[in-house]
Amino acid sequence: MSKAAVFDTRTDAAIAVESPLAYSYRRSGAPTPGPHSQVTIRERAFLGHLILRGGAIVLDEAVREVLGMNLPGKPQGLVHDASGERSIQWLSPDEWLLIVPGGEEFDFENRLREALGDARFAIVNVGGGQTLLELEGPKARELLMKSVVYDVHPDHFPVGKGVTTVFAKATAILRRPSDTRWELVLRRSFADYCYRWLLDAGEEYAIGVVR
Amino acid sequence: MLHIYCPYCEELREEEEFHPKGQAHIARPADPDACSDDEWGDYLFFRDNPRGIHHELWVHAVGCRKFFNVTRHTVTYEILETYKMGEQPSVTATSPADDAAARVAAEPSEASRQEGARA
Image (cartoon, rainbow over all chains, first blue to last red; front, side, top):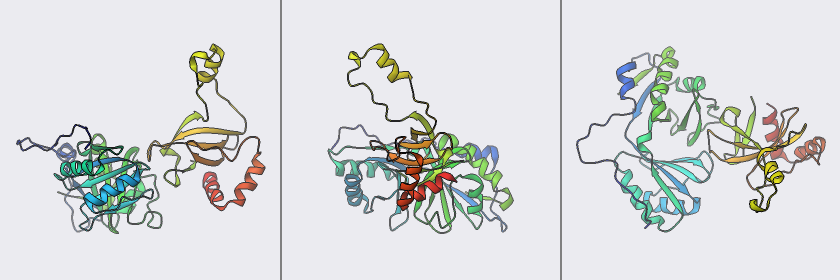
């Protein structure tokens, strides 16, 4: 077990928490999805985000043991577990992003640390710094085509791929977990800007926000 | 806009995601205390400014955030190859661009990179 100091960021104390978009909902509103909405967005707030850094082989063993998933070894890889709730994404040759349902991350962090033992690695909880936004609908890809510099054509962006790229001049992680759904992992500080960009860019598709 | 092949992401990405970081392969003097002021000044401040093939350090700033090397032609802006840190260039000024082009044509993987670089 490593000597790293760890602490659970979720406490039992009743402290009010707000998603990174709480302010945006109040200030910019959230149009209700209607029958004409061709794109809907939905925030998945308060998920557990962990950054895993270290050698691919050591991390792969630990992740298999603790989560029962393979670590994506190929660049731009994105792997989900059977339930579809937990995912690991390749970010860089020695860096992966693990997203788990909110509240599970501290347990997983401790179990991964135990499994990794004295290996050289780093695990950082970045859940407070970013949020996940889901895009769905027939025009979701067109909306992305206006917003990201990356080619989102299905031939080039198959299911199970995720890239860090430029979204409306801001940095964002774009992922494709299924045929119909896209995911954006946004930084907290850019969340309001990106949200308003999406509302503006999606206006012609009668964008709706599921809350 | 250039299309740059990131050797770590293993695909062509937009120039917007990268930052140039100047000349590559600058070795820090092994024993800085034993350097003359001229040698140390050269190391710190003086850079090549060739007309032709130039080896540069770039970083995939929005993306994998890794540094890598690019061999670029400063007149045509053509990117002849990209390679990981710690590797040596296969295209150099002593192997003129014509030779380089011939070599690139011989290697299909290199050729695909070059096409992207021209786009």
